[in-house]
Length: 283
Image (cartoon, rainbow, N blue to C red; front, side, top):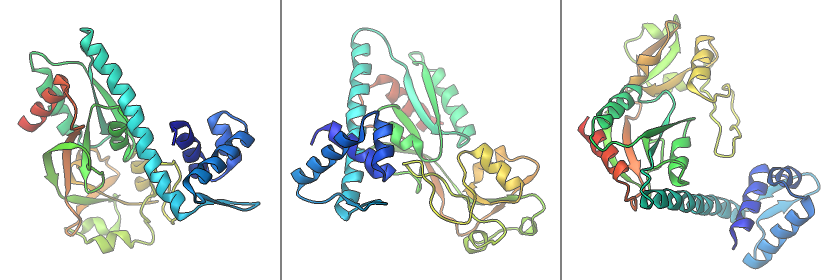
């Protein structure tokens, strides 16, 4: 399979509409349809179920979507990291790109940057502040050299990692909500609140899952929604440092602990990445 075919298929599989996929790719619809038909003939299986009104993925199509995304990420990563290696060979010290979720681990991030900046051969650190779950993909596709990930939410398979911190979780509620007078809560109590349904975060394709909770894109928007009494959130204990006066946090005893790790590609030969990892483990 060619990367062009994979890009075509991913666009159709994510849009589930040939017209929108063609527009996204900047091409006409007929050649896109022919390319998908050719791909199906080569693989000997249907990837999409088509009717006059809908397009849906078959089981084989769902598998190819996962594999195609991973393959395209790997190609992009190879291109980006090769260019950065070429700069290093030419004597131009490239900076290190660190991806982290915006608003998460703020205190830890500040300490890490200060500790690394004190190194005699420290390179420039370019920060990529991401939305929920985006930092893992940025590390996989080469936009980032290193990332702060959070277990069990992010996937670290394929990366080298060092654990930095493990913390409990709290329920973030509107100030004045009846549950804020409690010393602690249970997961079932928080997730079953009819007046504060849990927020819905976008998936990798940008679409939101079905559910009663409001759509959320980032922490600023989320905190506003909580303060207005539209939702609640279960988050790591360290989020307390960001809470406004109209929000409150209560420990959730049976919530899984969250472990922050620093992650990088196992084949990395970057001295800047190695130095950043060393600084992270020291703090």
